[in-house]
Picture (cartoon, rainbow, N blue to C red):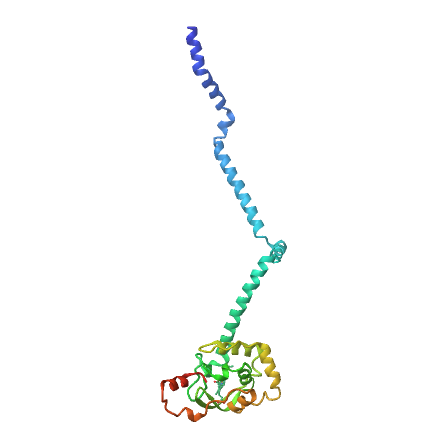
Length: 247
Ligand code: HEC
């Protein structure tokens, strides 16, 4: 009898005690299990931390200005951004030269630089375009009205002056464009070069060049081949090639 009793108490005693502990009144009034509360708290804290860090990463107002200035002054990023700027400025200059050409020259000389047969001389392969940079600069600054031979064709028209319309920098951009475009591969032209020509021509800017030969004399460039060369029939393939060459 005694043994049975003790066995009973050994088997159910601890279970009964645990049951008492787990049935506390406070837990009955708060049925949300503690692991859920813990997770919710953890999420709330994580969210708060994220918001705080975000706010620090993208500061606003004066703080933002100061932080960005401080970042700009860092040595390595400055080098990188200068290199990028040079590239961007180069691209911009090329685009600007093309745009100015489109506005001021393409109506006559055509977008492809071919000119108009019998009326407007070509710029593609023209020895006046490819000569020393002073020559095309002088043509733009004074205009030209009189006989001029370009790529074996004689023209006798009138090109307006641009000395009052275009700044030195704009002329430099246009000349750099036409000297590097199509089949042309001549050096770029700087605004200083144009300014130098403008200064040298001062007093004559209102008077257009009278002919291609006046330009040749003024700048000591090679004279155009005699006009009657063109009429001669090509006697060999070599001659035919020579006539195709830019002159
Ligand atoms: C109104 C039409 C017209 C416009 C606009 C014009 N040109 Fe001309 N250009 C001519 C004519 C015509 C000649 C030849 C003039 C002559 O026969 O004396 C010429 C000659 C030239 C020549 C020398 C010959 C040659 O073909 O190489 C160059 C260089 C030139 N122009 C560049 C330009 C550039 C660059 C622009 C734009 C800034 C421009 N021209 C705008 C009509 C024009």
